[in-house]
Image (tube, rainbow, N blue to C red; front, side):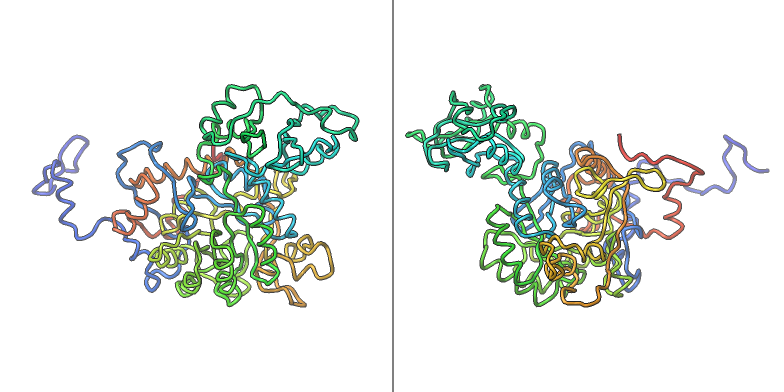
Length: 543
């Protein structure tokens, strides 16, 4: 007779173990459940894997997600509070994106598909956006006209210029011209001496940043000039920076100057050395050598030249997908590596060139090798959601670089428009697309602009009579502001690490290496099972 609910079935196991010994019984198994990272990434057994081909297995949750920290190095010397980097693409990162990524604890890499002067101006805007002591303020003299002061405000994106006798730092401070002083002035030819504020609150040279901020907080002024014993201007601090410090506690800043960290990309042509000189003069902190295939004589020579010429500038090389590629750049002296070839959402390199590597396999093999030399790695490409970010980091990357995922945000330079389906989208293109490679901004619009183009340089096509596309142009869904989207990504990452039982990215890497963090292969059916299986639904990512 079959068993009914509540009855004990006949033929049950003769001996049922004491439930209190469950954790002890686990020791009888030779290995932990799931796969180790080495078993997962065994190319001979598994082939090349993408982020969709595997999952992390859950661990033990013994802490709230709020205790998870996301600090991680981007180079040997510089770390970020949030491991997110925006790609140096002309529809993704200009100064606005770079500023807001840095404010959220990440990093924006300014593209180089523009003139050297335009790129240097973008670097300056990032470096001047938030400061501790402003050591190089924009200074004017009493004879500067109101019209010239308005033009400076338009150029730099801020107002509030100190006025000195000589119009230079180190000269006697006479006053300050603020936005309020010139906003409604119709006589643009009159000197600023007629409208400037002379009733100033100052601090003496030698004051600490904390003391200066207290003085500024108590005052009703927007700027606090720092002067020496003779009344000469030596530096400044800004009230707006004090406010930003309160609103953006994770901001990526240098400890000595409190300026936002700024990165920019260049190519590996001889003229890129002149471009880099302008960027360094503008205050650049990190340079990324932008190439689809980083293991070239051009990049190796450029790395050595930069490290010799600018020893305080951090250099990230790439792109690479094999240990052999990585070894050549590590030996040349790079401070970081960028991993990925053909995995980007707008990239068709693998299809057209039949060269590249599945991204998960590439990230694991390169990052595990680079870690032996203390070189951090960026997982660049293939990131479509929070889960992909987690997987890239679990494979050894210290940060992830995103293009298409951030191209739809308000801060990207792409153009917004309504698609045929009635959805709000933004233009997005790969740097290997024909549109990007034919863009003439980098060469000033001249007939030889192709030789200066960032797209042709990245794909070694400067001298080609026929351009071979390695990317596409299109559009991505509008995602709103970085101010909401990046915190959503960070919150998702924290909850994933919590599910995995680790409290930091360092613990994640250590757990993966020791075998306590486990993985599982995801078959095609498993991927279908893990997706949404409904007739219709609305996918709202965050609120």
